[in-house]
Length: 247
View 1 (spheres, rainbow, N blue to C red):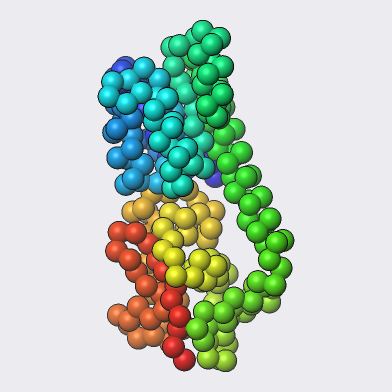
View 2: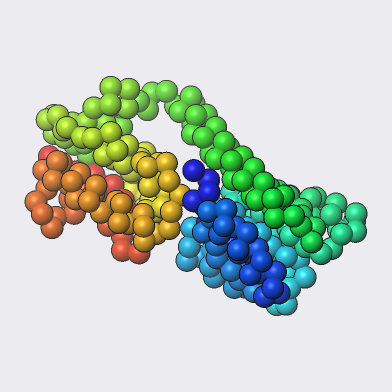
């Protein structure tokens, strides 16, 4: 699953960019490329990124400065961050690790070593996310029934009612609706929803293509006419949001 993730490569040397991009693309990853930290921040703001590979010595904003921006932004703090650099002194390596980077790879690197590091960090990020969800569920066992307006979702029984009437949903439709209900009032990105419903890392465009028919089907099954958003609000360019349903 992790080889469908999107990797952001940040390096001002075109040869290194192309070499790294080819290695990761051949391994099945999607790759975004930035020449410096400023470009990287722009890509982070407009794309879902699952891991960052960054050089240190870059113009305008170096790798250390980029790392500082990433770890201090709640949108990106959980993204694994790996320094890939020609700075091989022990003091440089120690400093990079002290900053909290997930790994420190020195150039020149073996392609297999790079892919192994990326795969391992992505897998670890998935494990941490799963652990966080389990901990959240254990801390709030009473939340086995989610209620949003007249919509009631029983997570244990895998059942849905609206205004007391049962609603028959597919497994993925149920997962989609439950995920939106768990984030009631908040906008959830298409990429995150597809990650939960399909166990798939993909970009916004592909995620939207997978979600749109499911959203249309959900709205119909919840009693809304074609063209009506109902309780599933589409925030254009951002994602979907569940709001209180009328009876």
